[in-house]
Length: 319
Image (cartoon, rainbow, N blue to C red; front, side):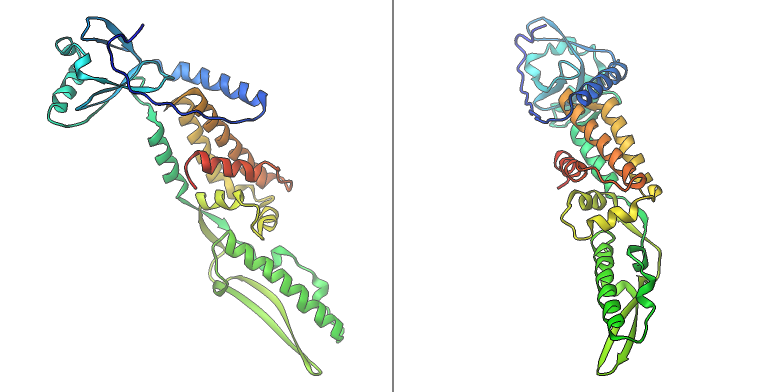
């Protein structure tokens, strides 16, 4: 039904994205199915100043300027001024009329009627998502020998060549280890306990790094957001060492996968946004779940991993 004399102020955002057609169809069917079962709330019928009764999917809030409403569950919000509403008839709606009275004193009232009941706005979802991602999980930290261990390096034959080889190789392994500890775990070099063997031979002194690890603990707390930002940047020098370290350690990412799955349910069942937005959010949350699960299960990194991580950060305003 036309809004006739109702004054509407609305805005829309266009989202452009490309991914596999089958994936689009799958997520579209899922979202439509869940939406049909989630937004079964009763409509709100309001009488306009012109005498016409209009059906609204929901009423979010009231303020001095009027009501924030939804014409359709998947549509854009609109502002309807008080002068466009039959205020006498509005008395039939106790909560809305009480909010109208509060508005006359300059106060705003959250109503959450119709589809808004139990639903979540896009802004609230993004705030909740960020708060969840700022929480930390404990990750098992490697030792230097977990990066690479070559027993032959320490089988010296009292030859300078063996010492040179051991010194250069252990320096290389230590550098890789130190970068991983700093870039992913946020551990500085002075927090590492490192053992160095000094070998004098002739006029030379060789330094062989035997071992290095965290001085006082085996696990490090890292925020979920930091983890996502790390894997979004494949330019990290320790990137592939991190992939190798977490391969087979699927338990390490259980926490973040579980939380991402919960957020995906919110998108599919509670989020008040256009189908395009819900489709995009649900897709990216699903992609991150898949990537983190695969990191623990497989030594093969999907090429789309850093791209999807970056897209997630951008879309969810987490840069």
